[in-house]
Amino acid sequence: MLSPSEIILAILVAVTLFGGAWFGFHLLAQNGRLMLRLESLEHRLVEQGILSEGANPANLGMPPGSVLNDFALPLLGGGTMTLSQWRGRKVALIFVNPRCKHCAKLLPDLAAALSEGAEVEPAPVIISTGSVEENQRFFGEQRIACPVLLQEDSEVTALFRAMATPMAYLVDEQGVTLGKASVGAAAILSLFRDQGGAADTPSNGHSRAGSHASMAFRQINGDGLKAGTPAPEFTLPALDGSEISLSSFRGRPVLLLFSDPHCKPCNELLPKLEEIHRKSKDLQVLMIGRGDPEANRNQVKKLALTFPVGLQRSWEISRAYGMFATPIGYLVDEDGVLVEGVAVGGNRILALAAQRRNASVRVGQ
Image (cartoon, rainbow, N blue to C red):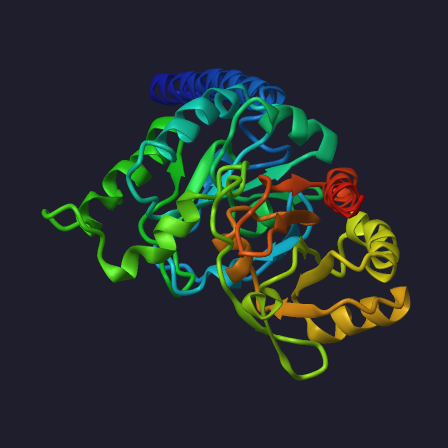
């Protein structure tokens, strides 16, 4: 038989075990409810487009001082863009999702912030996801003064741990993140208020010479340059090793085309422009390609193009003409002035060429 002290000890052990089991059960139940709440919250965030599928909310954003890997993504308006093209300028890399309600609310405020007249610093670059059509609808009502890049799925957001939207990184001139990621519309808009152009403008109201790039960028508002604007002069390397200047064609009208060898609409348009070039005696077609010289040479050879082609290294001439897109075109008159605003897309470019040819026929009559 057990002694009274042993019975008491056994009871205490049993009570302790029961209490521990009871506490453990309730702890697990509470933890389970917490996990269900977190899962429900994450599910709602994914449904609203704020959080990407499979993202860990506790693992968002890269630490300050992270070197961002380069990427090449298609532009919503055609062509491609890389992060390295912005080396030498401070950039706000903004991640959005067309299904994100908070992103939709951000766009009007962002459009206003980029057109208030202050020089845009840092340079905004948007990375979105989804189809071209979906993004065209999403951005269609807002004139956002910056390039919009599209990723196929979430390859860049995963690489940069930007699995929430809207979210942005402030990136320095060497491609390194400055501070933590900005999450939410207010934090993103503050990047432009805190880094705004007021500090870059002396008290006498005249911009410093170093602000020219910012001024040019501000013109990129989806409309390009206006009719009556003197066409910005340029000198570019030609594919044959020589140089091409716009001023060398002064005295005759020029159809100035911006193209990219990887742009499908460009490749559909170019044979038609070649036919115009061969038949027209009063219109000079001049193409500005971009990117890899060999890819441009292959394009010219494959399509049997005979009009002159200059090659910009990235988007430096596109920036001067107010739009990051291909194909776009301008009609430049005999005195080097833009006859019309920018023509975007093959049909409008062909209409611009036809307008000039019809005018020449009327004059000849």
